[in-house]
Image (cartoon, rainbow, N blue to C red):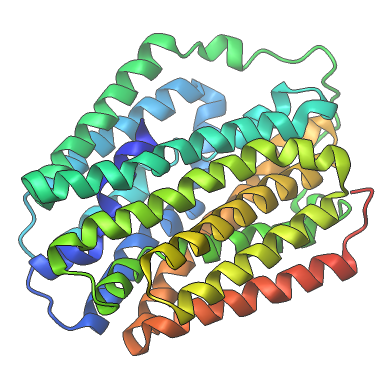
Amino acid sequence: MGYTGFTLVMPFLPLFIGQLGVQDVGRIAMWTGLSLGVTPGLTALLAPVWGRLGDRFGRKIMVERSLVSFVVLFTAMAWVTRVWHVLAIRIVQGLFAGYGSLSVAMAAESAPRDRMPSAIGTVQTAQRIGPAVGPVIGGVLAALVGLRRAFVVTAGFYAVALVIVHVLYDDHAIHATPADAAETGRVSFRSVLAFQNFLLMMGVIFGLQFVDRSFGPVLPLWVEQMGAPHARVPLVSGILFSVMALTGALGHHFCGRLLRRYPSRVVIAGGAAAAAIGSGIFGVSGIFWIMCVASVLLGLGIGAAMTASFSAAGAVIPPGAHGASFGVLTSASLVGMASSPFIAGFVGGASLRVVFFVDLVMMAIMAAWVARTMTDNG
């Protein structure tokens, strides 16, 4: 519910910023990038603090704390009158966010090693299903009631998520120690980085998240620049975002099957190559159905490569080091989420098309890097 609520309105933030009086396309892209990037940036910095508090007081109360803050802050977003108000609220959201940062680590810890890719893929599929339908619902809401009221609806989604967590989430069961868990002592940051392929997977996860989030500040502007009527921009861009999210969920879901047939190196390199092709198609064509094809390639490629990367890293992490190791991987993901909108927004201020070609180059380099350097037994 939380991921669905978030994607009801965030893909259309450039349009909302335009309604607040910012007219220049470059300035809209810049403010959008700042607003989208600051929350995951602060979340990455504060994740260890919330993690320690979760260990002490329980993860359930930490998740409820975050969801309550999102209900309040998204409601407040409907009443802003200046563009800096949006940035200020997003900063506060970053201070209280973090409800999803441990979900992948929890899935990996709770599953047997031979089923770890399926467990990770299931969690990441759930995280993608919400964004698959959110932008389409948000596009319809924006057309019917306006973007401001859509923020109130988003707050309602977080309220429902809060009730579900409070009623259904069993904190004691989740924190039960697995029978085969081995104590490995304190794990240092340096020892985590020494695990086989771990540094490489950190770079891959950062790059995949960077490219995935680079579309937020520029895609609605690109759709309008390619000739879509202004009133239809939320719906058209919402469909494209949803196609990426839905096919990303399919990539997460089927990655486990791919990994039973092919080495992680092949799946990750192939996914990055598909994402590179999709990015290039976006940069050369503004035709709707062609952009849909590009969205499919991006979603499938990034989804499969992301799950394969977490699974490859998880395969070499000893049981007692799961928390520290997946925390580091989550930080790499969050840094990608935070830096991408900033950079895409500033680059988009000069040329929207250049953003897609930067994504193409990043994914092509990553595919070649993984194919040449990754060891198959990791």
